[in-house]
Figure 1 (tube, helix red, strand yellow):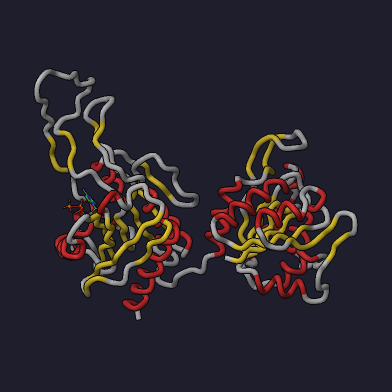
Figure 2: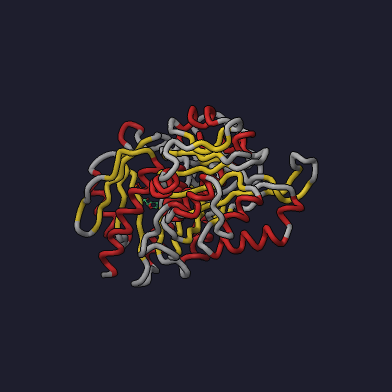
Length: 400
Ligand code: CTP
């Protein structure tokens, strides 16, 4: 994405440097525009160094400068896929809400067709003022997104709402607001299972697997970004993604129950979880003591969540499964597709320890028509987006 990051005059301006770096590291191109007041808190040199792109706007000693005064605001407005103002003062909110354009940032905001996102930061009294709230209301009515400030102790010493939201959350909101929505997934409810499950033997021991849940979490983000209402049923320890309703579970049975409660209302299921296939026959309330000689552990099967939900699939619902295979990939995937009644199986090659915990990965979709071109190898966030685009395209074809 090509992002214009507007930085206005507030103490939180130093956090926009961290945001600029985070967005650049995520592969976005970031061009900063400083207002005159913003440039008193942070320098263009800091921002160009972090983004590798020019920084526009103000020089505190010379007022505002422009390389090409007449058309620069139009070029930047066209260049942007999204304009984010972080931190946004009461002043810039008031200007933008009322169509005032008196410097580079406010002219870009008026000229751009791109989505706009605000992350305000100001004193609590200013934030609560009806004029500021009315301006925000107006900006929301233009389709702009607002990442609300957090509560806490502010630089002025007062306590209340007005602190800039968490930088990572702002980056996620930028991703959501700046991603074009997919017609067939926008507003649709998608249930996603992710992560490993854990089957306890006793209070200290557990049976699990090497999955981290990273791919399922990236899929949740990718479906969220194209407009789906995602419900994530998550095992393991990774943090839940921002803006996704997440239910945390431990065992396969808990995962099944959480999914069953949500399946009837869902449009689709993505079963990305690495569910333990077996669990100990009995859960010991006390720690099991070791004994001499060969020790045995009786295992019983866990429920197959994907098979159970797919078995109750209505004709308007769709189901995507995963298959981790180390040999005869397509043959096994085809068998899974048919046995579990799936719309597609995404085949993960786990030969030689690939996939689990790895940064980059590849998936081959297999449908009733056979193997489709492999997606990747790509980092997991990009691979998740590729899966969503691939599946969105197929859903579109079905609807037409
Ligand atoms: N799955 C599930 N519940 C289980 C087991 C698997 O929902 N108890 C889902 C996984 O999330 C994945 C797919 O089923 O989408 C994997 O299918 P599965 O047949 O379990 O694959 P493998 O475990 O690789 O099976 P096998 O050992 O038979 O190859």
